[in-house]
Length: 94
Ligand SMILES: [Zn+2]
Ligand SMILES: [Zn+2]
Image (cartoon, rainbow, N blue to C red; front, side, top):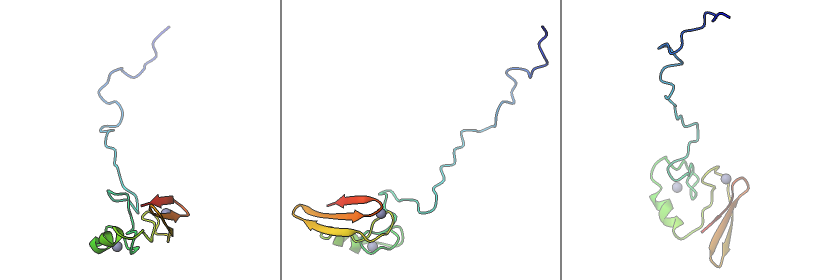
C-alpha cells in the first residue's frame, strides 16, 4: 500500500476564507421592527413618512389594511374590541 499523493493535511489553504460572512440581506418588502410593511390605517408604506396621526387614530379604531400585504381587511367590532381578518394572514384582534 502506498499513500497516494494526497493533499497535505492541515495545509493553510482550506476552504473559502471568511465563510462566516453571512450577508443577512433583507429582500424587497422587508418588514420593519414591528413587522408592519404597510400602515394599517392609511395603507401607505409604514416606513414612508410619519404615521403619527394614523397611530393615534388606531388607538381608537380598528385597522383597515393588513400591515403585511396591504389587503383590505374585514373588520368586525366585537364587545371586547374588534377583529380584522386578512384573507392571507388571518385574524388580528384588538
Ligand atoms: Zn398611515
Ligand atoms: Zn395580509
